[in-house]
Image 1 (cartoon, helix red, strand yellow):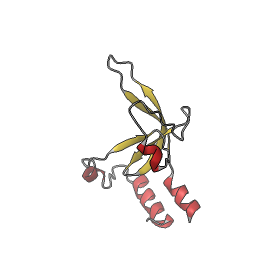
Image 2: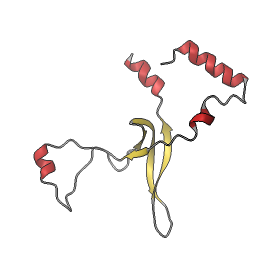
Image 3: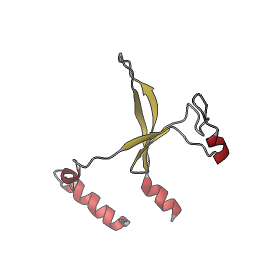
Length: 109
């Protein structure tokens, strides 16, 4: 984990040198899986065993709440789900906010 002084030095170096690309060119080709989490539910095993086609499962998130966009099991941002207006509609999401992991870590520490 990067301490505040190191982070400030790196940020200053990037600000002073706009052509500084860091490791991005090396990392650009690495595939990541991005997932959208609509919600979750905790269920006893007996209820899971009773699930059948047509069963409805209520999630912990309301329809008007932002969904979580996750990369490598880490929430990176929150957004809202929409549907394209194409002949074959697809789900899309609009990013509403990025998750600030630095402040989360500081609150935990």
